[in-house]
Image (cartoon, rainbow, N blue to C red):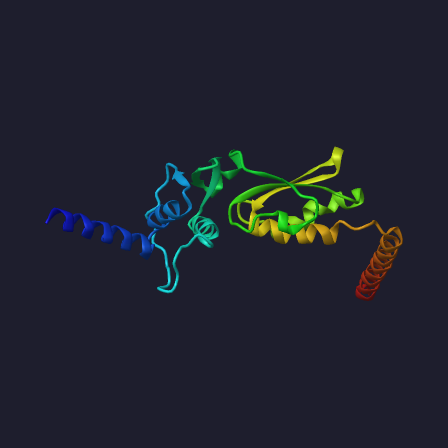
Length: 209
């Protein structure tokens, strides 16, 4: 009877992993599949919605767990090759995360919801003053961006998935400075301001008796 009982318990345990009903069981199953151990002082008992047609496997396990952790407000950082630490995503700024010295190829950025630190030296220094202002609205909740003026470098901390989008925007913004275009814009703005001022003065005179 004992061998049968042990076998039954094993099947129940395996079934629980396969269902992936909560975050903890998903992480445990991912650990078995990938051989990567997870540690962390966090509560992973939150429920998941997982369709019956979905199952973790070697091809999707890394990205799937990365996305699930992100959805529950967590992220993971590397301790070593076979160990990852799970932390609240809001604390990622205090953690040592992987750096990416990006040279322009979006494929160099991992397609994951883990956080990375992307460093990019601008090709056109003139774009630096307005780069961070233009990109800040596209950051995720815990994303950060700073500019290093002395080296004309942009540093962005965000999820890999969001960094891919931001990297595409950086390439579009980091263009040669067109002085003529700027002069045309400034001339147009001055003309518009003069018209607005003239209209206001005209309305003011009409109101006078």
